[in-house]
Length: 314
Length: 136
View 1: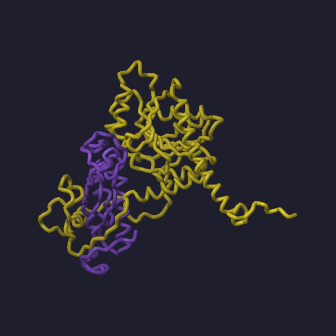
View 2: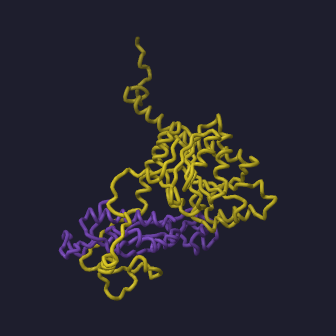
View 3: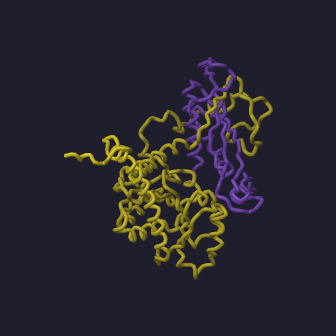
């Protein structure tokens, strides 16, 4: 399967702005300074605006008019995430957004997971990296369908590119879809991809205080996989301390200790996956049952107060 | 980092509304950021470059910061923990995952200029100086 470059995924609509073309210095300068200040403010330009008092209301400049909008800044991403979420729900696909720093062992853990799930659950993987399709190749070698998204300079996957990748990959209904995000503990936290939940991987070769250093990510995740626990005898890593830090930023976070290399704890992770997968499939089955019941009632079958004996009397 | 993506989303959103209103320029963007998003202070540094050549070029960025508040199940009350990511009740110490405010990342509104660069008025606002509400 081809590698998808992030910019290929745009719909090709013309963007009327943002080309980064160079303005003549005079022109740009005029534009920056021609809006009115009331004299008291010397800080009003974006690039110079550090650290002033927040919360005060600026007067609207003469000739300007305030337009109230009240919209999420990432509403475009959130809209695509909503579309993805509905797409996954319709197909009873458990989509998990796998996040960690580079080198925590996401891909190794996934290849081991794929081997364990072989013959039990269909698995597909969307791989996000800035460059190369090495990870997608490793996943395919382990036996799962995979598509690679190269984000180029981008430091995270977004819902739009994931939507296209999912369509291309077209996982079987009832699949587990792992979305392996770009190795980065900062940026992916802010971008909903339409996943059921985020799963953060922390490895024992990292600092125990990573959860409080990068709190957004651990606050946004439902499960923490502590990877490389086979190395614990050789390290000073204090597991209890690391988990305490994680719970400080997210008291509800679940944690499982695993080693992709030795296989330790993988059973618990597989149990967790199968539990979440069953719940997702059950929701879809219930919805389809309800839909079928509604349609049956249109036929006069099973409707309240009517007997089921449609062919009786022959 | 993703501040640039946030800045671009902010600029796209604002320019879209400005064009719909027939305005010639956005002079100010008023946004609301939860304290958990204050990493986005770096928005200031990428907003300038990201807005070049758009209707938002030269606009000023005004940020309202929303403090973290949580619901403490034990006290059954809204509490304001001291740290940015300290999800414990400041009074009884009980950890709580119930974040009420602090995750916001919203565009509150924009100031629009209807003056064309040649000095004429592009499209007269309905009532100058008053606030309108965008259809979202």
